[in-house]
Length: 237
Image (cartoon, rainbow, N blue to C red; front, side, top):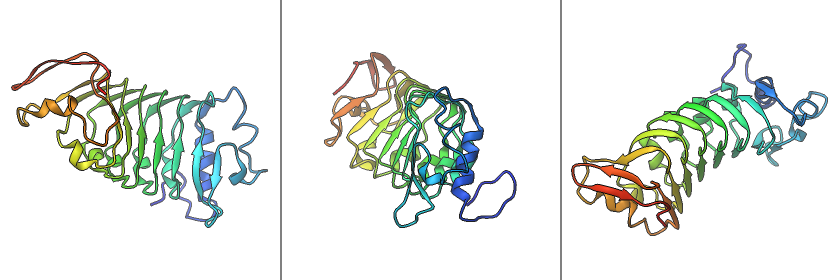
């Protein structure tokens, strides 16, 4: 599926058009990384932070703009980068909602949007990212509940929702649905244990899954349910 704002048809410059849409939504680029480099005078596969494939040489497989000092919003056209494997916008000042079109990027393995000013809910479409291995949305201002479909992505290894404004519950069957997960962080939110599950539900956060080497869900946050009342301590490892 191609997302357009002009109605143009698919062609070999689809990825270039998507990148230019991203550039057009940048409001501050203090280091002139995109202003001077992302121009049509240079092949887009040579643009800063952009890597194209060796087989499909005009398709972007990696877009890394980490710690670039950028401000702006993320356009829906990012969903046209259909060969994208790595998307890393961490440690910038992107704001606004996270586009649901990112969920169209079915080849995506790493999604890093941490340390920005993103708002709104986590898109339900993220549950369709069936090859995702790393999901880092920490240190933003995201609201709402975490889509349970994310916890069905069996390829996930690292999940980080720390320091947002998320609420609701986490599923108690994380271990069974995420056999490869090694790190799960969701502290500094308003999350709790599903009180409709079994009386042993809270043990998920006390006895981590065998493959998890780092589990930090609550930082001394009071959990109260029909079955359990008490504190889950900071940095459960």
